[in-house]
Image (cartoon, rainbow over all chains, first blue to last red; front, side, top):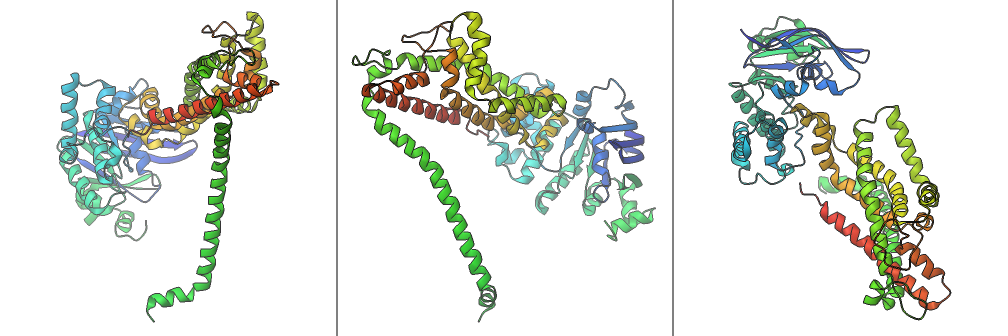
Length: 252
Length: 287
């Protein structure tokens, strides 16, 4: 199978504290990979190494390689701006900008200058909102504040915002953890739908969610990758005792 | 007896005590709030009563005249407006930019130093800033001027704007910055078109307070802008201001002058109020 992202021997440090130990992992193209593990196990940190969001933390440092389409993103001279356009991100808490719904989605398009005139911009915004399954709910109030949307709608707006810059990979950091079951279900359906076009990496605390949406699951503990297998195998017949204990709720 | 009665009965003495404490504390804080507002209302009321009778169109447009011939504060209004405008023009952009720097990039020794200096500057009595500008601008120019007055006011304004801007920007949740960064926005764009707009109404409040503060300053203008009995539209000449004019009228020996001082005070307070309302209106939350 073709790998979209290939991580080898990745170590990660916050100052002197090591947060990730020797992670090696292949993420296949157009599949959904879920990261699970107890709080503080490094799964979010790992996710954020994939678009170099950790660069914003001054004391953070990484070693090892992270290749996306064969190119090492930690190589000197990597264009972080271009990288983040290619690798989009959706956060745990929805974080719309204090702008209108339209301007939220248009923001990434505008700053990256990828549109061709006003009509094209409007079309791209509409397409992103349609893809994020939000268009029908907001098409009549595109110029109202994004803060007027419900929590679930805000999160789908953030997904639309990420889709609008036409990324190839989407990183999701517990995208449904602050939502009710119905909104969560919508996000999950959306994630599965998005798989046709995008490679998706999703961090989740919810093991049912991981088993429902993902093709492959990685289990992390204390900064180490314990097991990485197809989701079906992971949840029925894991290789590691630790994984089984965690999945069955013996700790965590 | 139902379960509900049972529950309220068992803890009734504790509950009553809590209710009483709660009522007393609410009343106390309400009283303090009323007291704080009352002071302002009393001042406004007193100024209005004292000053309203001397108000007239002539008073608003005339220049000061010898006692007994009327006279007004037209040139003082223009002077105050011009010097405040100059101070805002210089102090606001620099202050906001400095605040953005302190909040977004200033987590180092340089930022700490700037922060400390700004705090110290805020605490320096304004008359000392007047002397500073006197030495720096008035002495080399050979005369007092509106320029010197405006500069003194901008120096007073700068640290207030910088520090309130910093505090307001710090309140913008980090998740918003990350959201923009994750879309490929460079840091400066995140600061410029995500963080600044998100903090705009808070920054405007800070700016407003700073403007209100400098509009009411007298001491730094005594050395720098001095005063003028005439309309003056040029920054290189001594300039009249409402506050200095109020000081002159109020310290004069005649009752007519005192009445004019009250009227001028009423205008000054009114102007500050208008600025407040205007800025609130212009920066009201759109989203």
